Amino acid sequence: MFCRPNVVAPIVHPPKCCVQHHVQATIVPHIHPSHTTHVNHHIYQHQHYFPHTESAVNEVANQHFFCPGPGPMPFGF
Image (cartoon, helix red, strand yellow):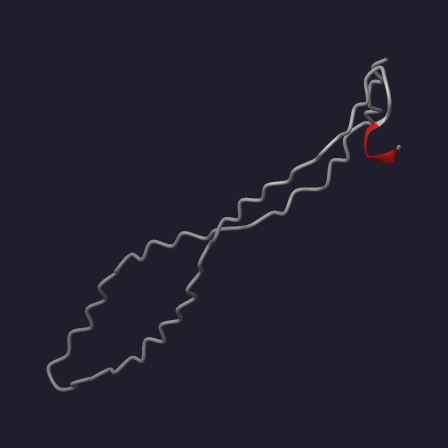
């Protein structure tokens, strides 16, 4: 006798959303001519780094089923 397993409807979870921002810098030269004034600018550029790693996990599972046939039951069933 074969018994079909019960199968229920899948549970669909909401997606995890990630946002990636891509920035392209554009240089706009501004020239301020003067014959008497010299302006020197110094800018601090703060660079932030966010290292990210990824990994993968492979899992394996085993199931053992004892399917008795006609005759005496094995293992004391």
